[in-house]
Image (cartoon, rainbow, N blue to C red; front, side):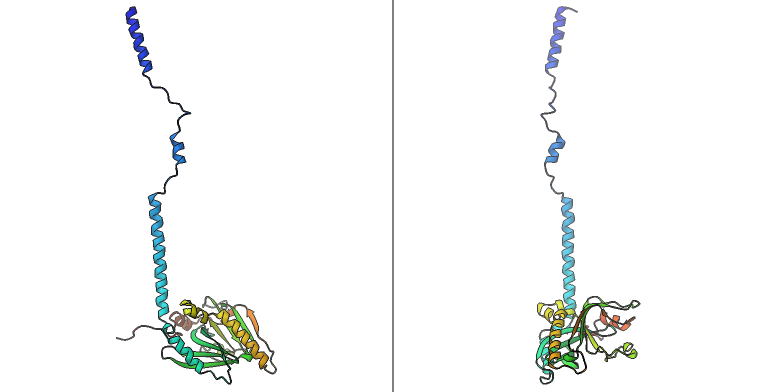
Length: 285
């Protein structure tokens, strides 16, 4: 090879070296993984799509539940405009001011009998008497009155309902039981007679319309009813004590036992609200 050829070859080799790109500086450039982790990732549209339908379905379900409850409550005749006020005025007119004294308070209750049957009742507390009215809110007339002298009341129990161990029945919620003759126990025939009325106590629980409005909530409050009944009974004991009977009222907080075992009648009656004045639709052809 000649000297001229070597110079040409060498020059070509130098040019190729200058055209080579420089190697990147690893320390000066940030890695793609670091830049991606520093930027917050926006929420995915799939997550938004999942949360939005669930919230909407929950709102629709709550709306339908409230609508169904309102429809059930509207079936009670006691909620018809003016019906409850008319019934209260009628039962007040049946109070004897001489024997019963002045009216202290009025209540709308559900009475639970010894066979677990619910019955709609208007209850009045006067100075001397506890009055329980069976009032027909359809025909607007009083069908039955039970009078219990306050100075005979010796015990008031408040608590949740319970049944015997082998009973097939159950009842949720709480109630108030009023006793007026602790020395007398129900007979065997009375226990097994669903129509017996000679029990020395009565049991109350919340009326189903207690959540309709604030006024009905006050009329159906069994806790307030128990407190006012206790005060009225204590005054009646001190004012007119019964000879040979311990004066005063014992207030207990304990489960309320209903000694019923099968109670097919109560199951059917309570589910269909047969003890209430209820709009049951058109019957006929």
